Image (cartoon, rainbow, N blue to C red):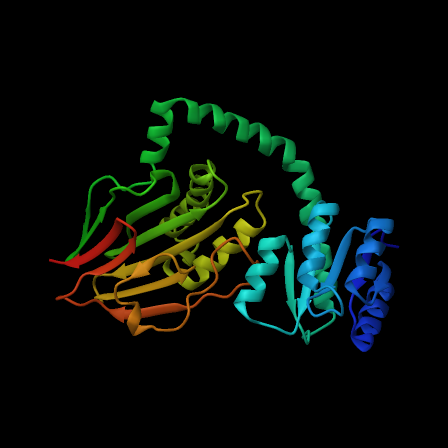
Length: 331
């Protein structure tokens, strides 16, 4: 019998009955509240392991419940459920502290079980890693106090010079932007191709450099795996963003990242890229007018889209943020 106690806050009597019965049959201890106020009182009394909360509730909304739970019981993971797939709702829920977001109607009630187990596993792992993380964070704070070391770490987030692959020239400009908030990189890959990255950290003040270094360390193993012929995720920007997002959502890094990442195939004169977040601007994005995908590190189930186009010999391909720029030009 499971020791996991779940509070379900749901005003839809039919769905609540189905969910509670299913969870009980799968070994969970389940309590139910039909309103936000009742749900808060129930959580305060019972201190559950996980809370399932619908967004649309009578009285106070699910977002208000989430906000109150974060203040009163910040250690309890909350999974938000809603019929809305709007990114604004998802962003707000995650911003307030939701651990996961399930869209109703669910394809299967098994999704509830998987989401709860993932939250419990992640919570246990985070508790186990918390002391190590903060010890590491203390060391980072010490490093920040050494200007020479901080400058060296920051220098690792910028390319050394330019790069030529076939007829294409990779370069960057970096002026007044806070260097701890941005990572720019480009690397040579097999078969006359090249990887490029621009990433913007949206972390707590003073944590940008640490966050970007973590993001960079997630990509480095994929470069080695590609070069050894074991994995080609690096050549698929859409899959690469998905992989990075899952890793970041499971990490202790409390940061979101706007990212443009892609691959240039100089033999085919083609560029393929994917974009997360809306702060980094692409000069040819008007050819792909759909809304940018969700920033990395916000929602584990976020999806990303890939775009491919021929590289123009007459027009540079650029990614910008304020005064910083990554440029790919034909020469």
